[in-house]
Length: 434
Ligand SMILES: Cc1cc2nc3c(=O)[nH]c(=O)nc-3n(C[C@H](O)[C@H](O)[C@H](O)COP(=O)(O)OP(=O)(O)OC[C@H]3O[C@@H](n4cnc5c(N)ncnc54)[C@H](O)[C@@H]3O)c2cc1C
Image (cartoon, rainbow, N blue to C red):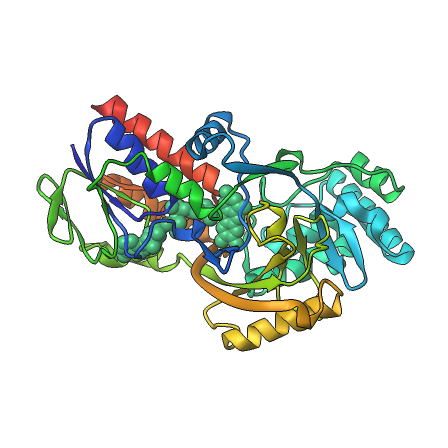
């Protein structure tokens, strides 16, 4: 079969590699001058930066993890024990927050624990599960944890009122500590929480993008077409035309809404469904530091606006010994926005540096250089009611024989490992059909 794969991120590259290995004729269309998509990285003056915030390689899916690490090859990745904290003005709180109550001021600890227990009782007594994310957080964690962490942190990430978000996405995404863990942690006994990321991997050189290149190394020559934006996808009598060229099958990893705008003959309701797919964007601020004594942290969450506009900061130099030159270190701060950029790059960088130096993470004169990377599609915006629209858009694609996979390709809250899984499942489906 002649198959077009649209998009050269990790989903598109894995799909092309697996389908080519199965003997299909492949073409991969990528608009950018390079493969990588959301996994893209840059190396500047010996400092590595990921474009879409800090990326780590981990998976609960052993086959997928083996595939990704196997592609990189033994010795080409670095393994780190996760050490993640929340920064609250003057102190580190262990992550997840419910597992770190012992780190809070006494008054905050009492309030969080009391309200957590009250919420637990209300749930036990049958309190209805709220349908909007803000109230769901209160229902799940209680007022105290919400006031200090859940609400301000999520307001920073999503940039829309939390009442407008649904809850379908929270399963497996919002850590959910059992009551015993919360009680123990409030008493000062450390509980781990969220163990499946306890250890993670990262390419030794070249940043997270190296994972995509390692996978793409298995794609036969001549398949990848860089600098080739897809502008039209049209259904014909016996397959599809992509940019006017005929294919038997199309696998799209382009944002579903982008694909929807290219398709002709959409019924009005389906067009509305595609139009309702929305996203949050990201500016990553990378800072190269003349600092040799970076703390051992992997990444930090910043719920409080006082600590800067970033929701998260990664000590990227801790992910691989080759991520920064000897004696130097680096951080990446993630600032999200919805529809309107958060000012100029210089303004965002200044706000990040001001927040981080206020917290004492480094001194201003230790910043060697900074770079900003803007990523348009970073997070799916899970507004209430999105599921219905998504189902219509996906169903229509399935009826038209269009395969839509990947984070924005399928509008699923996927990490890169889940993208690889989706590509593997798709290749298995093709194998069954042929
Ligand atoms: C802030 C953040 C942190 C993350 N952290 C992690 C992490 O720690 N670990 C992890 O595993 N995952 C993480 N992820 C998720 C991971 O980045 C994604 O799941 C994965 O990269 C998505 O890959 P994809 O191939 O589906 O999509 P993309 O990478 O978005 O690929 C789509 C491709 O399509 C191309 N394209 C778009 N339009 C066109 C067009 N018209 N024509 C041709 N090409 C086009 C794009 O250029 C792009 O290359 C994170 C994501 C974000 C935003």
